[in-house]
Length: 259
Image 1: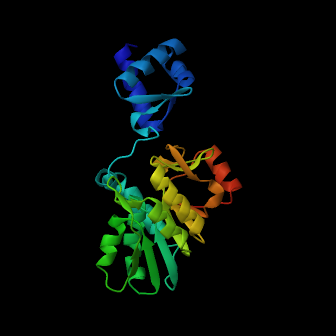
Image 2: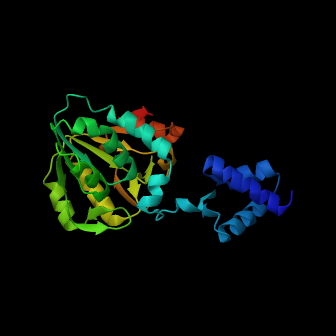
Image 3: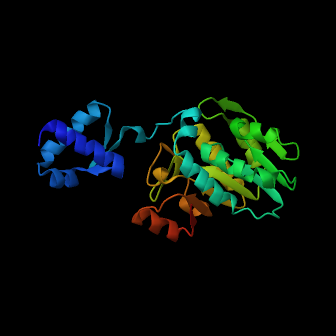
């Protein structure tokens, strides 16, 4: 098999499995591990993948990789809609209390699903996300509190010490929280330290935390961890995690809902 053919196989495996290992590639391609490593080095130089211990992952899974809000809104839209429908079903029609929406495109999708319930006027909504607050501001009967701070343009979320102090003074009944990565060893993570600090306070403040994340986020680790698995109550996703993550979720008593 020529090198270009091997590159195509490796790229296809990355698309299908989101990770490749040196040992597995050597076996599948019937080549030496040294040749596999040279192929991976070449593809990393071309920007196709990123080398990790024992193999490689797609280039866009770097711990600091974070697409813009507009790009993320378009990604996995069907999965996010399904997750939002499943997550919104966790709020009973007669619910009265407060809900905190963390910044994120999946949490925004949950908010959209819940607008008919929120519009009844028996729920107080709190968020630090401009993208979530704006559509809610157009629903007259919604009780809405927007927490201010320094706006991070990439996510349209308020961050900083003032934001954190405001969150610390709250005790929402339910918080919907988004993640960039969720793994057995590293817990919940995101690329930005300031957003991680706000997310950490949201989870500490909430009586019940519901994490919403598409299956692509499972098993990933972004730069900054902001919570352990044991600190969340429910995970709503659109696919089953791998065995190690499932075991960790079970041990942490996390209830999982598959959309």
